Image (tube, rainbow, N blue to C red; front, side, top):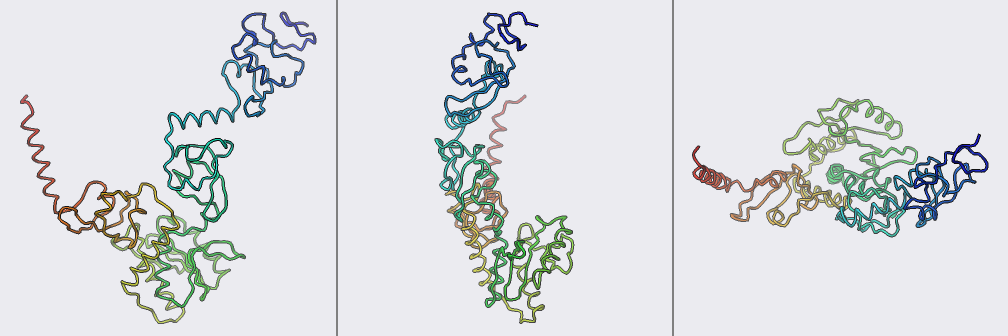
Length: 399
């Protein structure tokens, strides 16, 4: 049965609009659509000028810019102005760069090679929150792909997956350096793994075939079962394996438990943890327990922080402002750690020198950036505040 208003000789049954302005040929974008049109899906005999602007017939299109091919309905292209997805993404990225976006200030942007799928864009032109995929070069020489926002706002480091898995924390470096001072004849390695057993361990002493796993409270809370399972697996592949755990955690087998220590954030005192390990190693392997002086500990901590800073590259929101850098003397919590690698919100205790009276006092970094400074001038600020409040009260009208 022939449909009224249908000029199709094959009676395909498609809904044809009468010869009015509803035809696609009268649409303002018809010339562009005609240029990109390749044919209808399943009905190659149909012509573009015979369908309505509201037709749901799907067609194959080829972008006039990037030559990308895709399938879309007539109504979407006419009414919704939909087009090539890669070109739309590029236009959005350029609009973000030119109008809304702020070019990135990421310190390691030089390690960005190119923007994937958009070679005409430069990585330095993208904003920190851009979701475009960028190719990066890791410090190990490998190239990997990652979103701009994942590197600049989430990870804050340019590391491939292999280097992420093998990265030590500053706490591990500090314990390692103190142990190396106590046992200079033995070889101590960080982030070690065997070919036969790929599990990466925190510390490994080759002379004793000893594996040491450090379990801070923050990362091992509620993981007693998995920690025990990993410990048993380590003992099957190494001669000795021990865990050093926070006293707030549950005991795992015959692990070494370390109590809380005042002055250290999150109970992570590398001195106390190292001393517990030194005692255990001396008793287990029948060695004379060595004595580590405060000067040797200070040198070891400085060396560990220098190694960690070279591995880290940078920190987000550093505390190295010019005014505070002039007052900074030293970091008491982590000796050798500089303000460049200290966040403004950290609770590290540092020594500061007042620029007015040259008085040296101790204060946490977070409190110093909250405006709490030299204690000798605290009374002056309070008296000034009271004077301002009294002046305001006297000037207020009486109701």
